[in-house]
Amino acid sequence: AQSVSQHNHHVILSEAASLELGCNYSYGGTVNLFWYVQYPGQHLQLLLKYFSGDPLVKGIKGFEAEFIKSKFSFNLRKPSVQWSDTAEYFCAVNAHYGGATNKLIFGTGTLLAVQP
Amino acid sequence: ETGVTQTPRHLVMGMTNKKSLKCEQHLGHNAMYWYKQSAKKPLELMFVYNFKEQTENNSVPSRFSPECPNSSHLFLHLHTLQPEDSALYLCASSRDPVQPQHFGDGTRLSIL
Image (tube, rainbow over all chains, first blue to last red; front, side):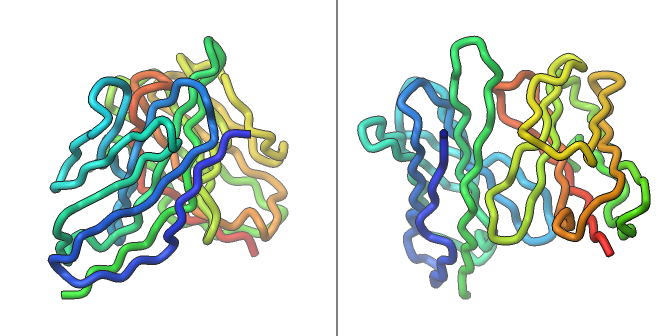
């Protein structure tokens, strides 16, 4: 069955540190990839997405992610985090089943705490 | 403001009660979704509707009954729930099942 793994459950960083959150998925076909973010007390919102083309995707607030097909990975990065980046980050994969319903599968999430 | 509104925000009910969760979207989307978010578990897809037709039931127990009267509204009818059903229930919508989803704030459900 299709699955999404986020290896870091809880990450604590100081401001200005660099961030990389891992995401791996288990599906060999065509996929659309997403990172969602949930700030404290707010709803889930889209951070960035990959559908096709350049595997390095830039999102909002200085975040980027790189799709490496050979590694089934879509890691999220930010060169310098801010206190306001404190949130929970979810990787999600939508697999194409060739005409059947697409399902968005989420990882367990990574809680990022940035210390001022 | 997400464009997806869920009511109520909090709900406490006994195991024998019947209640409904409501979701409304004003984004002109055609697909709507129910998810369950429990602590330390991935977000679980429950149901998918596309153009008012149910296209996915992810092995959800029959004590959860969805209803989609039109593309803007989605309900989740609840009856004889169990304590393990306590969770945050999220509604989402998207232009189609492939496009990014927009989420509501959720309904925090507690079963006594």
